[in-house]
Length: 320
Image 1 (cartoon, rainbow, N blue to C red):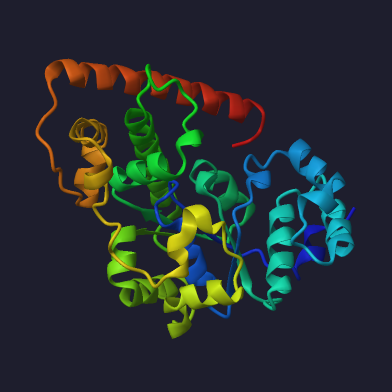
Image 2 (cartoon, rainbow, N blue to C red):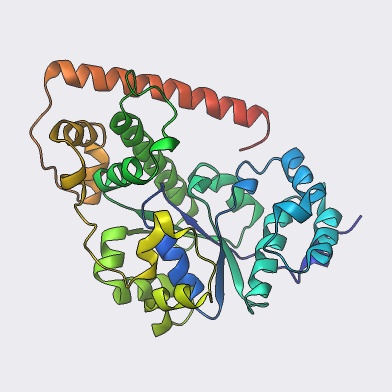
């Protein structure tokens, strides 16, 4: 059996971008990937639960699951040799192979999966040298963007669980879980930044990120739209991420006011009131009625019960 020391050529100091969907994780991934020493792979849901059985299946169906990898057989051989003892290296092998395809063989690899906020503990344990960048965005803009671009992702019946309530609760939970884990990790391994700062003052913000990662800032990080157009970095579909083809701007800040109804904004602000206060997001609406606050509190309690059940189930299956 190979020992982990034999895989030292595989970098084990990744950068993980965490944050709820539509919070700017894709923009930050492109900005970091424009750095010559960093490569953040496209979002890989195949690794979402980090389940050994699922990962094994990925290896056996390798050729058609990973069409983006050129030297498939070499990577497949390496991955097979990792199982089952070193399953934590599978993600590292894949991301490093992607980096090599884009001419960054020795780059520090990273991963951007919007669900990673649920697995920070496991990732931190797998990769003791890993660093986490948590990006947050105004929950009203997040909810507005998801409803506008991904209406099909809302699975619960809308008549019983209105989308803005469900999504606002999820945003809260992601922030609570990620920030708590960040407190445990400490300031050397965890950094939080706001989307609004990233698009309004990108140079200053990225310099802080580079200081956190202990790398030099490059002006190319501000020209990600050029890299995307030239295909120098892997980019997601442009139907829902078309803004990535343009220079960062602030036009989407506060867009919720045009896309959401006032009563939807009230619901979001009530559910996220404590987190919004901590992050400095000002409320724009008046207090909800007593009857509405009871409804919102009841639905949030149901979501919390479901979340706790899911966590117990994942822990029993070894996913956490």
